[in-house]
Image 1 (spheres, rainbow, N blue to C red):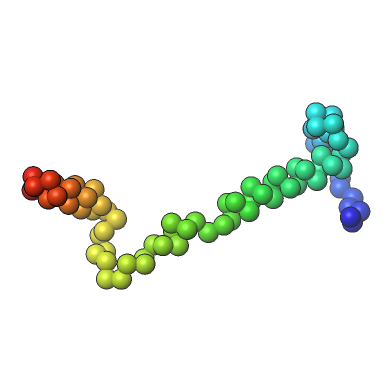
Image 2: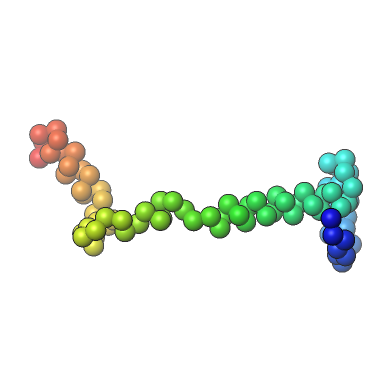
Length: 84
């Protein structure tokens, strides 16, 4: 491990101490666990959304496809049921 010096105001130090006591670990371990948790949250948010990656994969799709999706599905459903 690499030694790092961090300056905290009294409020943050009190929070860190409280977290350490609650978890039954040292200040350093509480800080490491917090950094790990925060890092995981950021990593989840930064991953590309696979649904968004699929956007535009249909070539020559109507430009208003998304805005008319309800109409498209409703008319297709009604046609399948022989009601349209």
